[in-house]
Image (cartoon, rainbow, N blue to C red; front, side):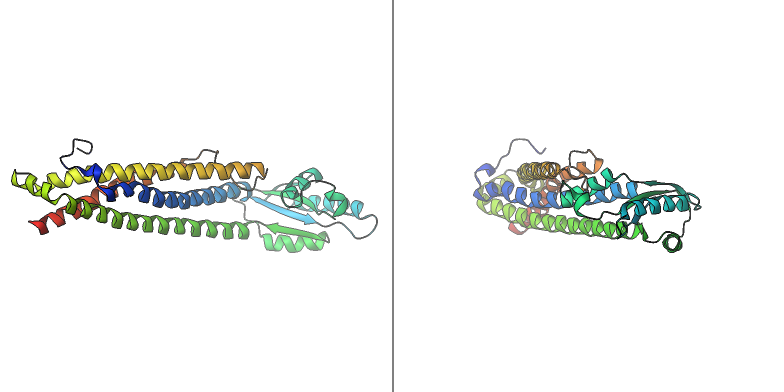
Length: 296
């Protein structure tokens, strides 16, 4: 039905020639917004899985000449203290090489350890489901080991989750605006086609063609153009996302999830293609049938 022969010379309509480009541009913007939501959601999920049961302890070096040795002694003392805390699965000091690797995205490589007094880090893994009063533990650890600071990642993860939800809401609003603009564009194109081919439509009506038959002619036309434009917009959006991911890959940072990592969420970027076709079908049918009833 959608791709059968048309009795109307619609391919020569000047207004219809702009429809794929307009829909393609709007779908491109919507797909980019959707890609941002997918990236944000993947980022939250990745960091939540890595840090859900993790806590970090920082121990700053001492100010005297034997600061490095004093720091190492306090690290051992903190590890012994944390090892007997109920709910703590493990407490392991991070090697200085790992600390330097964490700082490289911001400070670069080189003699960082010689230029800056770096804190010693202790990675704490909590027993999943264990009820640990981190505020009380932070207070007791500071009393037992001077200069030890316990960092809980949950408040930071909560802020990140709220940011991701905001990006998702923005993507939904963007897609709603794109759908509304697409409806207006298709209404204009449908009315333009009816006005330009009014004589042919009258002839078809005289020989017995029903309004639904004429509407089907225009539906197929709008569906093809809208689907073509949406496919072009999604393809350009995917190319943009992959190019941005390649630039992030060159930055050698593990902070952001690369777009090359497959997730079922990336399939959502294909959603605008059938959505644009369905919007074109419904909008064209409603517009044409209403206009034909007025012309009768």
